[in-house]
Length: 74
Image (cartoon, rainbow, N blue to C red; front, top):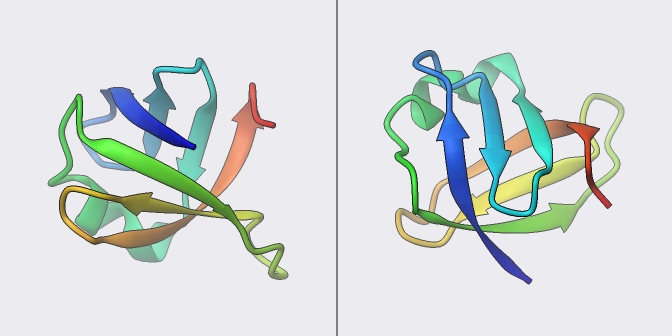
């Protein structure tokens, strides 16, 4: 399912999607997310690695980042 970014922090470390889910982006990816903006489309993929549960895929830029769900997902 596709979602859109509702809010993103200036540093790219926190993202809220339009479904209300909140995400903390892995430190290695925050610089990439700092260039994302509200309304871009996001896909959520479950990965369950040792460090992160999910990947957020920005459909508009093709960027893929790892993130932890802190509320509202699944």
